[in-house]
Amino acid sequence: MEQREQTEWLQIDSLDLDARGVARSASGKVVFVDDALPGERVQARIARSKRNWEQGRAIAWDRPASSRVEPRCPHFGVCGGCSMQHVDGSAQIAFKQRVLEDDLWHLSRLRPQTLLRPIAGPGWGYRTRARLTVRVVPKKGGVLVGFHERRSSYVADMRSCAVLPPRVSDLLLPLRQLVAGLSQPERIPQIELAMGDTVVALVLRHLEPLTDADGQRLRQFAAQHAVQWWLQPKGPDSVALLDPDSEELAYALPEFGVRMPFRPTDFTQVNPAVNRVMVARALRLLDPQPGERVIDWFCGLGNFTLPIATRTRQVLGVEGSAALVARALDNAFRNDLQDRASFAARNLFEVTAADLRAFGEADRWLIDPPREGALALCKALAELAGVPDDASPQAQQPGAVPQAGAPVEEPFRLPRRIVYVSCNPATLARDAGLLVHQAGYVLRAAGVMNMFPQTAHVESMALFERE
Image (cartoon, rainbow, N blue to C red; front, side, top):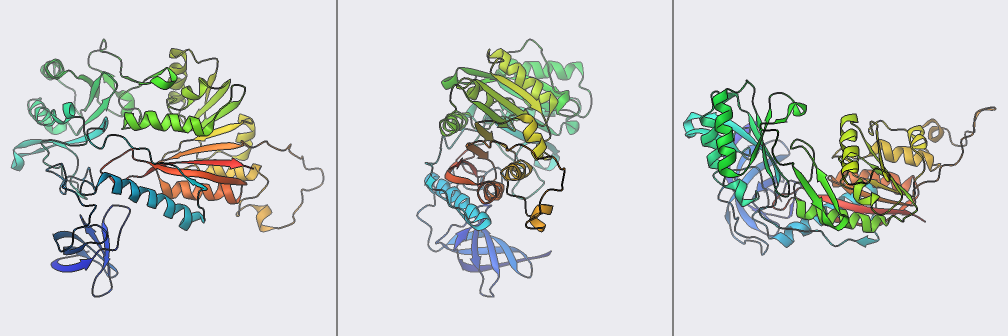
């Protein structure tokens, strides 16, 4: 890729999905401009150029946008952890809502009947999960601990972080000193943060065994800063407490009387305030009744499954990992919900219509997939709805009838209501197209959740019903 330095005045028309301003140069190229907002006229320094597009950064503003604010963090623009600190909080949410609406329309020609009010929480100090990279960089004074620089493999020289809780932000410099004093600091690639309601857990990834002196340094640090250390010598499953008698890591969902123990390398939401509101809204939309059966697909540790179990007679949580399913079942026992909540392991990226029949009919579904979405699940549901997938033999041969003597399967009663929780609006839109255009559902409502303020990350929730 050609590297060059030039400046150009540009009129910014929109934002892309990475929160970069989008403009057209005098030559007609699309230009992506960091730190530029729609409606602004900026002078951009162009750093990268290809035949059809360029990339640069705003260095001067002729007409700043009304939504522009002063970034709170002194590292903004260098650190890659945030991309929208220069945007007013309400404008950030409006941008995310527009991304969701645009994806639904452009990818699946859908518009929700109702736009849900955005879910928002604290804009700063909210991030209770983070993976901090550790590097020994003598030219910058020794050890660095922090996020990567923007679009770079280098580690930002961070002394504070506005989106981490203050007590964790205050640990960034002490963590540098701690790692520098360990026996092999160059063999420490990362420190992972996971906070429960009462515990700050730090996971030390170490590529070589620690010495007794290292362990003593870690214990002194833990006592001084009120944290607990977990050690990770290999993969995530190798994580273990440095001191086994430490307090249990857990968070609560008070509205449902549920307490969720977890390990620091488990997936949990990064924003506990938004998570509590998200779970409550999902259950209001799902509206499970006492005598019904519900299935929670991609259930994880039971973040939705256990609250659902407090509202209905039976909920089945399905997840891809047998070990995770065992942990979710343990959480059900800990909350005395084992009679209402059961769990099963299945690779949901390969699930079929036959699998759905085996899992059984349910009155309502909750779907909470990773970024890849729930394509196989939605295709299987469309097949059971009696509308074949475009790639199926039935679709390729209209009017085809079963061969003589072929078994005729009983009709499958589809869930009449589905709540889909998404961390990727593009895959939500794709799957929504299957649910509506092939499985016969109506998109009743959709809206965004500002789970990651100061970033362009879009989380959303949608409600589907069969009429």
